[in-house]
Image (cartoon, rainbow, N blue to C red; front, side, top):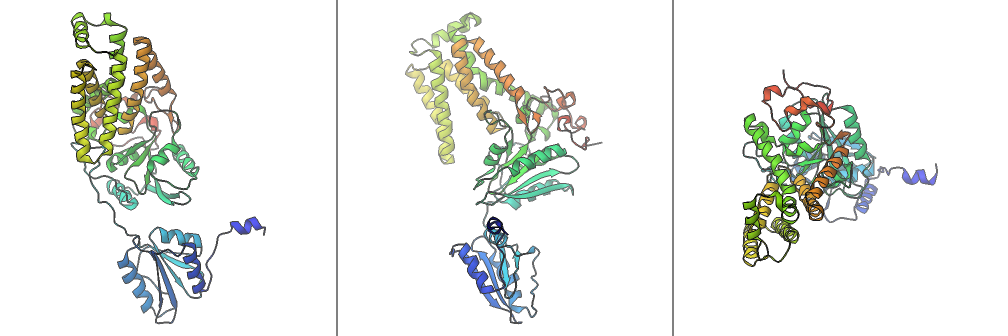
Length: 483
């Protein structure tokens, strides 16, 4: 065997217990939180139990491991615990110990028993902070991996629900699970998700956002191509549509893929109330997205280039409100929008009670002071306020951020070419959206390509009895979701 093959071969346990103890201690750098308990059973067999203080349940280790080992009168102790597996690989033992499990080693044995003893303090299940609903469930994902998988299991009691578990990160060894419903999801979509996950080779997975960026088709696009959510009901509903979810440990934000542009206008609440109300609210969201993206640009274009398009009374009113303002509307608009973004960012970073005060009171005080000082016009404050309210109306925070970024680019186009610049920016935006893909699904689906059956749940939310088919664009195996 060559030296390279020898170096690459996995390190195994020895039959000498003292040597194994010294080896594990050395590999973990004689860590102060590594607990090693050595005992001799009634039959004279010497055992050693390894666990990490703070990651393992002391009750399980003491009552269900140490006591049975000490009382054992046979050569092989039987532990009264459910999760037990045997391994001889040193690397598997180290990962198990660092994950909160315990390892049991015995004299004259080159294998160890890995016992599931994970236990640590975690946040309880609470209402999601970024996706609040008026009518709907109040439970949200937490930072605990098994709690999150249980929340999905609780909603989908289907034996075809699958969790494929991986560990990503050479050093962090973060648990993730690819979630799907077998018999619904398309095989090519599932294979593509697996392929992309296997390409991730980094030291640390610090959260689901890292995986989202790695899996994204178009890195230069401002639009999110994977959806993050804190809501188990949202992820469960997506799985039944033939989509794939990714559950990541240490974060409450889990991923759904593939996504289209119109998916970010939908909310779980749309299905919890009357279809007429849901349809009207969806139309309002689309209108809000348009205002949040284009309203400041239209203000710049109309006040700087196309005065004649305004009714006479409105034109005189705007001109009167801008009398004495030393800056052109372009500078005025950019200054106010930038100030609003700074206030919004400051409100997020500060403690919640102070942040809300800064966001609301700061906006009012600065706007009023700027008008009184003659720096900006009252009509500009109204435009900025409507734009901000419109951006808050969108159910997806990441999508709203994308529109906020595009707003400044469209404002720049309006400042250069007026309405022609806005039209040009709109055409370029549509070309960009039409070229985006998310795991093989065009971002502009179901408009381009056209799937007429999917229009029943696009802008219009048809009555539930008419939504008997899964999305046609997902090419699911099981086409129907009701009879």
